Length: 115
Image (cartoon, rainbow, N blue to C red; front, side, top):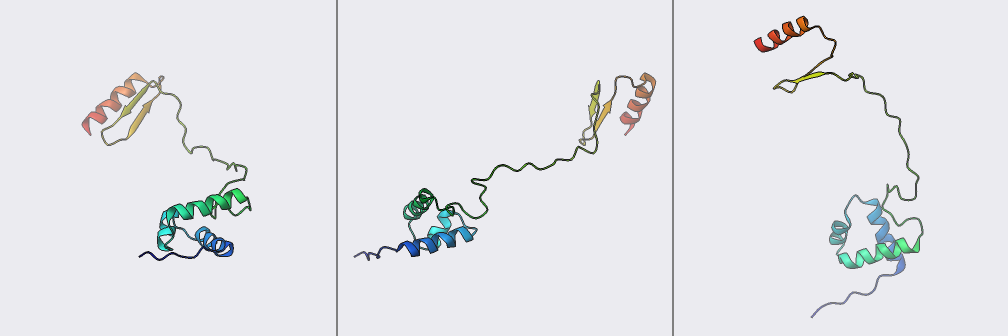
């Protein structure tokens, strides 16, 4: 024999939805912990959203707000396009500009091979 629960009042549902909004739980986890079927809980949330009372979204939601732009600082190091780029086995990168001296490049490569 199954026990049938009485229907919850609008005030009870509103309090439950506020508890959910104040929690950091997913809908599924909140419903499970409060012994509410997921379908019933989702219906309550949907109806609350349709009601449009401004409290339909979970706390911290950005719904209804215009996007906020944040300043982004320029990178600390900028590289000019290079004609040569060496990537070493350990992930280090060496960028060599096109006007780099061929003699200096030869010396640099000898040092790198010796490492």
